[in-house]
Amino acid sequence: MTKKRTSCHCENPLGGRSNLDTSIKVNIFHSKAIPFKKTKVIELVQKTLRKFGVRKALVNIEIADDKRIVEVNKEFLKSSSITDVISFDVSEAADKIFDIIVNAQLAKRQAKLRGHSYEAELVLYILHGLLHQLGFDDLSTGKAKKMHAMEDEILRKSGFGVVYASDKR
Image (cartoon, rainbow, N blue to C red; front, side, top):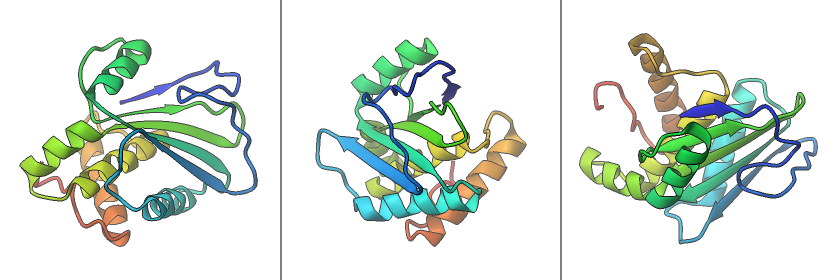
């Protein structure tokens, strides 16, 4: 799910102020051990942004649980449902600032159901939120197929395998 916030005054839902330099910076916030190598995820985010022409950005990723994702969903999207990812564009200028909150508990459940790793499912959620901020949409069947194909391509090239193939979901 995606929502554009228009008045952030450089504050973001994950807290703190953002200072961009001339590169792509990725922060990963979590309260429990995470099932992936941070450097591999950071590299995936950086390569994806560069692929779409973004050269200067700050991406904050929060690894959350069901309770936290519902809190964010209620506060910003007025929904009390559990979801996989919520992403925000909190940019005020040309420099991109994205906040991505992913649901680790849901990733664990879905990975088991779908027969792939927890790591791959969680990274899929991160990429899905990022692609929404880069203009991808999955509200129609055609747009969803295009988005899922892009996810498969990026995940495969990054060593996570194809986890969001349209024929699997």
